[in-house]
Amino acid sequence: MKKILTFFLFTIIFISNTNISLSIESDVFIQSTVNRAANTLSGDLSKEERIEKLKKIAIDTVDINGIGLYSLGSHRKNLNKNQLSDYKAVFKEYFLKSFSSRLAEYSNPEIEVISKNKINKNYTIVLSKLIGTESRPEVKIEWRVYTKNPDNLLIRDLIIEGLSLARTQKEEFNSIINSNDGDIEALLRSLTDFSSQ
Image 1 (tube, rainbow, N blue to C red):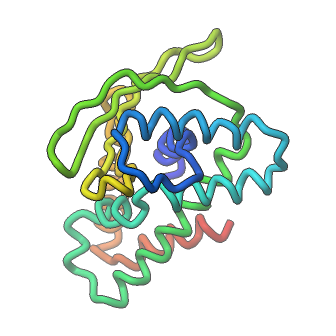
Image 2 (cartoon, helix red, strand yellow):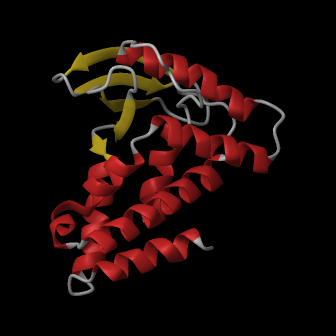
């Protein structure tokens, strides 16, 4: 589970820590926020300060609740209201802990937006690339942007070299639940244990 989120969170780092109140195109949203978020990693902030800013980035620009519900898959329909509420809270803490603690050490990778493809009124795919260096190859990254509310664009998935990270996480969560006889509490314990480390 940790390995799956590492690259997912590594790429989400480039999202801005500011809310965009004007309706803008998805590619402009990604490129502008990529550029602004780089300041969080390239400045003279302490690790603790970076962590706090990274958490704000995630809260402001990533659909954490949507990703969490998608990751539950068909198990979602088996939860009562209390379980669903507990899961949302635990997943958010899990996501933010993973996001902030793993990315606070990174420097300033460069991402360039290439194009966009509007799927429908709710989703646009923004194609970008992580610029290669002597020590790192170029990586293709597709951002699945939720555009139902044009004044509040949100990231719902990253597709790294053809691999959907949200789908991968969904498969891993499903594996944890199924290996524990369908007990959602096993997943909650796993997420809570990670968050409390």
